[in-house]
Amino acid sequence: MNLLEEYYNNTNEENRLLSQHGQVEYLTTMKYIHECISQLASPSILEIGAGTGRYSVPLVKEGYSVTAVELVPHNLDILRSKLDGTEPITAIQGNALDLSAFPDQSFDLTMLLGPMYHLYTLEDKIQALSEAVRVTKHGGYILVAYCMNEPTIIQYVFMGGHLKEVTEMNSLLTEDWHCKSEPKEIFELVRTEDISQLNSRFPLDRIKLIATDGAAHYLSELIDEMDPDTFTKWMEYHFATCERQDLIGASNHTLDILKVRS
Image (cartoon, rainbow, N blue to C red; front, side, top):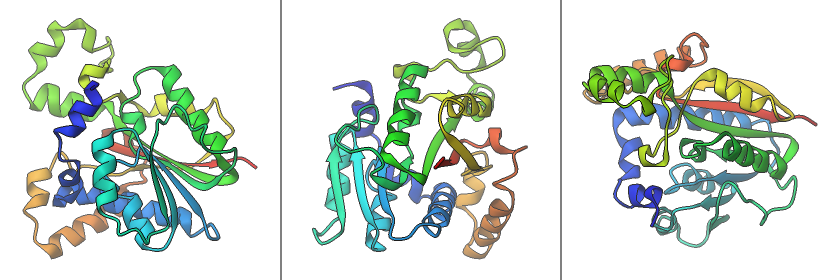
């Protein structure tokens, strides 16, 4: 068992997006998934790194045809447990780095809402995005989620009291405070310029780069205590600001919405 499997076998990924502050990321991601779907006629959808089905299952229950690929067997078992066998979904074990099971231009919408969290080398990131581009139809959409660098510096290093620890371990940070992730840290952290440099290698046009949770993790306790009316207002504020590029790098998670050139 590798570090990633061990992490997800012992982490309740379902709960992360079910808390009220976690709903900010979920509702935002679903909003923009539906925006892309609205531009497509009878879309075929691929989710790479589908996890426990937090996105694939609701989409398939809405009637969309979904193929869900997940690396970790434990997550795949949970995903399948949510299905009754009548849904138009194919759920298989697979790796974002090798989608050879699918022909070129198979899908209208391809989603990588988790794999880039756990790919630590530029070569692997290029391979994952290359495979996503290959299996997506020309004119189709690719949605890619990332974990951002600055929230970890602010929340873990300074707010969490780990400054001495990370500064004494020179292997964890660059001189300009970019985290240097390794598999043992589980999550790979990027900046907006890293994302743009990766995209520049492919025939892709960016539609939008979204701050999917914005300030939600900074204010998690406050948001979790909000009454329904206040939370509704918070979501209105979040949706009004989540596309503002001056705020993107401070969000814990981002969603890159890309279109494959025809």
